[in-house]
Length: 295
Image (cartoon, rainbow, N blue to C red; front, side, top):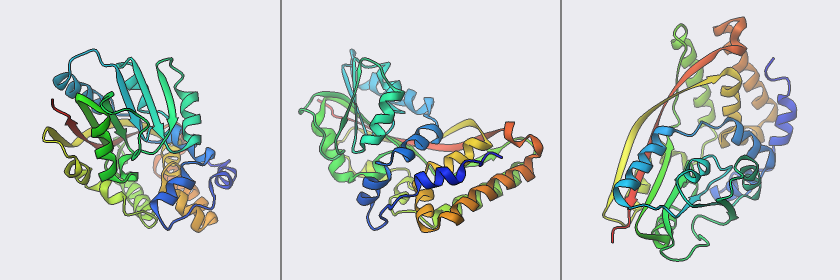
């Protein structure tokens, strides 16, 4: 079965994560080496549609060459790589050393460097950056402080891009769509028992972030449809890569492990003996807040 190593993985992932404050959560969860590895492997893939939207906006607002981008809350560097293809220099910033260690293994390009720092206190000079990017991260920040810090470091006509996805999934395999989506909804509902208030920022597609940006030249693009394929193993891995499952582990490790085992069994019941090799289409919606520091 796919979950043969689940007990061992759970022992690694189940730490004494504080659930009293979001800042404490980030301190403990994202500094876990085991979690960083799972996050890198199984989190929802980077959307090329969103990245193309950002680059189109940048082209519209700012003349080349693009010198420096900073990827704030870069985590394991998943959004740092596509930025490195367009900029002379990219700086990945995150508060977690373990996430950055994972990023260094994943992204070893010569024009990329990583620094431990908070999104609200960037180690950059005023007006020194062409693009500030924050992918799947801003809901962990103090939004007001972050956006003002982003504006500070942006050059004239520099751009800000803040994006994520709505944590709601539609599954499709062409034959068992209804049954698969019942399972997915029930699993996400279970995860919601352990959610933080910052999850609401994601559900509202970063409206709070858009409203907080103190720039006149800004836009908010919602409901960007994205489709990709995942195996059953990857879907199960995705659940392990979200913070709510980590809270579930802390609350009741044995029950959390049973949850994943039951999830695998349900997929097997629906898809049959070939479930391990099945590829399921996943439909989600991304969104992106864009702004320009006009001269």
